[in-house]
Image 1 (tube, rainbow, N blue to C red):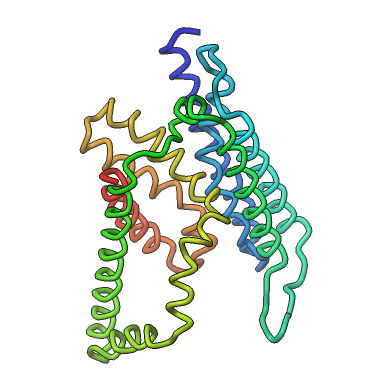
Image 2: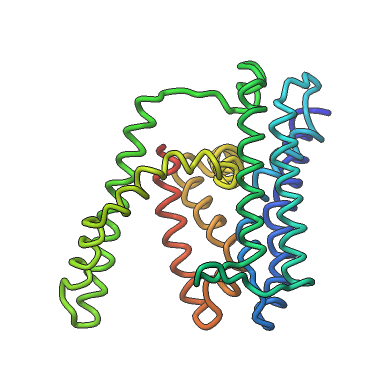
Length: 281
């Protein structure tokens, strides 16, 4: 198979998985939303579709060298498949929420979290034993640790500033002044808040497969494709737009069912802004 044909085949597979499957499942989200069913597994499963599209494309259209980290990739695909089945069950076989120690928990959401944990651990093991050559062939090598740490710190700083500005604007709009900012800042006086923050880097490795599901599809695969076609800067902006449009089923049927248009607009701002930062990262 010639290189151009392989690239075209991979792109078609990616679009079918990332968008076709997302909007197909979106129909079921609509169905579930009209009946008040628990839809929490759908966004979780959706996070896996972009990477699944890239992986299937690599398996079906490769150059013949066969040096891909097959164990890692198969784990990602298996996790995606299980989450899809779980999402379907949540609509066609709905169950009541659990009530444990006064807390209400979604059964399917709880199961999906265990699936992510198991998938993440198994995937990390396969990635670790795959060897440098296979990791490099899949774009999964570790590079520039110092720069990565600085970028993470920069993101945290920007995120804090964004939050402060957001709650300050809310206070101005509802007439409460800086009260919301004070309430937000007061949370950091709680030791549990700092314990949760300290646990974030550790918890990440137990659910990383979901974030890999998005970033391997958007930033690793589709971003270079769009940049090659539209240029380095325009490619990033267009990626932000299509990334935002990918969220439409969630915007209409999961995040809200009363202000979907506003949510879609806000999603565009979020995805374009985050997309610019992630592209730089």
